[in-house]
Length: 351
Ligand SMILES: C[S@@+](CC[C@H](N)C(=O)[O-])C[C@H]1O[C@@H](n2cnc3c(N)ncnc32)[C@H](O)[C@@H]1O
Image (cartoon, rainbow, N blue to C red):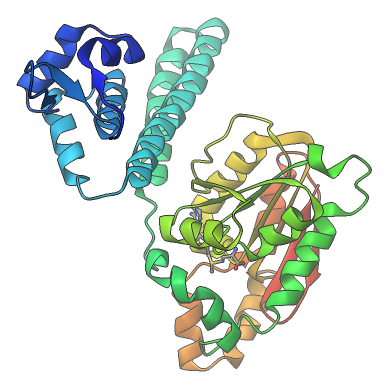
C-alpha cells in the first residue's frame, strides 16, 4: 500500500495548522480520504503535491477561487506540467519585481538629483517605461507552435524543408558556435557555466555535455524540453524565454543560441540582449548562430534576388540586422565579430 499521511503529519511537513487543511477542504480545494476503521482523515502523496501547489499560489496572493480555477484547469496535466506552471508564475513575478526595484532606485536618484518639477516628470516617464517593457515581455507569443514541431524537428531539419533551405549548413553552424564559444578556455570545463537559449531538441547542447561543461538548456516550449531531456537524460533543462531568463545576475560564463533569436522582433531583441547581459558574467561571451543580414543595404540587395515564396518565408520571422545588434552590444562595452556561414546564416561572437 502506498504511504498515507495523517492530518498532523501533513501539517508538520508544510508547517501549517491542521485547521488550515480543514479550511482548504471546506472550500473544496482538497478532498482528504477517510480511514474505514476510525473515520480519521488521511492524505496520499498526490495530496501532498496538491497542497504544495495551493500553498505556493497562496504565497503569491492568489485568492481561493483563483487557485481553484488554476488547479482545475490543470487537473489532467501531469505533475511536471504543474511544476512548470508554478515555475513560470514565480519567474514572472521575479522579473516584475526586478523591474520595479530598478525603477524605484532610479526614482530615488531622481529625488536627490533633480529639482521638484523634474522629479515629477521622471516619475511619470519611469512608470510609462516600466509598463511598456512589462507589456513587451508579457506579450511575446509562440506564433510558430514549437510544441507541435518538437517530435518531428530533428527529421524535418535533415529534410531541410522550406524554400530557403536554411538548414543546409546546420551542422557547420552548430560546430562553429561550439568552437567559437569555447576557444581559449583555460579552466576546468566542469566549472564553466553555459546556457543554451532556445535549446530545442538539444543538438547544440550535446556538444558541451559531451565535453563535461556545466550546461543548462532553456526553451519556451515544454515539448521541446521534453524531447531534449528524452534524448539527453543528463542535460539540465528549464522552461524559459529570452525575455525572462529564469536565472540570477552574472551566473553564466557562456551563452549560446542557434536558430532561435529570429523569433524576436527588433524591440524584443534589444530587451533580450539586456537580459543576456544581466545573466552573463563580467568577462563572459555570447555566441549566436542564426538567420541574419549584415545590414539594411545587404538585406535589400538579397531580397531582390529571392522568389515570392522565399520572401514570404523571411517575412514570417525576424532575421537580425547585424549592424543593429553590434550597436546594441556596444552599449554594454562588448565587441561583436561576425562569421558568415552562407547567404543568410551567420555566427556572431560577442565578448
Ligand atoms: C528552430 S528551433 C532551434 C532549436 C535548436 N537551437 C537548434 O539549433 O536545433 C527554435 C527553438 O527556439 C525556441 N524559442 C523560440 N523563441 C524563443 C524565445 N523567445 N525564448 C526561448 N526559446 C525560444 C523554440 O521553442 C524552439 O525550440
